[in-house]
Image 1 (cartoon, one colour):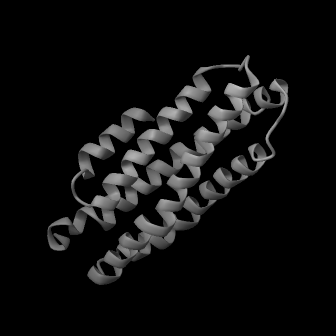
Image 2: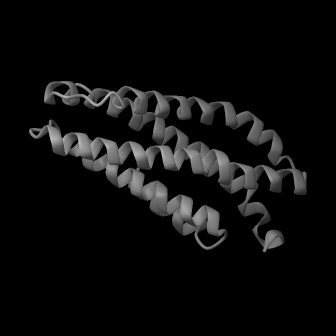
Length: 157
């Protein structure tokens, strides 16, 4: 996952300030995800709650930036250049929306602030499922960026 993020930054970095910032947020999200999943079970409830909360905040920030900043910019470019990109966006958006719902559901489950370590550790399988959804999301987003932005980078600049 982190390798693919680095590849995306290399491909599209510097093209747009919004996309650059978003890809940095993606990298932060992936690093935090890997930290959580790599820990196995927690043995300190306070550390676990803090770590999960920080991850969830970055997750929500990333998902929100995608929907309210990046996708808007990409769709605007697709309309402006009218070269088939809008059809791709309409095809991929429902799939991306499904990953958004999975992210929000995960956040909502954790938002109840588990008070026992057992409750927190029981969320690790959910975290693994979320990781699969995030990987799917990143692939879809990369397709959008590739088609809707990179194709027009010279014209936008």
